[in-house]
Image (cartoon, rainbow, N blue to C red; front, side):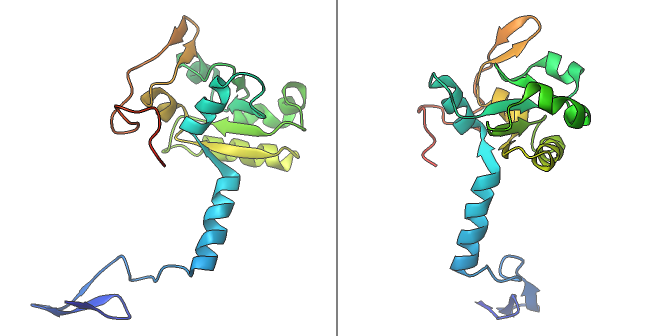
Length: 170
């Protein structure tokens, strides 16, 4: 079987079948490097945020939970600032220092609340990144979180973090 320039395959029993992967050619290495490099300027992952916060001292950023009060009460990253997206324009200046980068999070990958919060903060002049995975992956990776009842920790989900190592190697 041969993949043609248009992404179809030749030599199949039915003539041609569409292969969705090469249907759109990958970007050139230079374009890909620019895109992925830029992505790292906009995103931080849960493990990196947790490592920075647990290292002691000033991590060089503040974490902002952009969810509602009810969601915050269900659990949040220890030390996070509670700043729901809807009140960022009115409250950010009272709670955040513009000279300190901000890392936003919301529920998880199926929610774009952290993206909306990051946009609102960037429009106000803050340096900001979004924490990929949000609170869902914070809890699923086994990191400690706070509720109104105190601190909790769940066992790490083996589908989201290594079972026998502290580092996933990525």
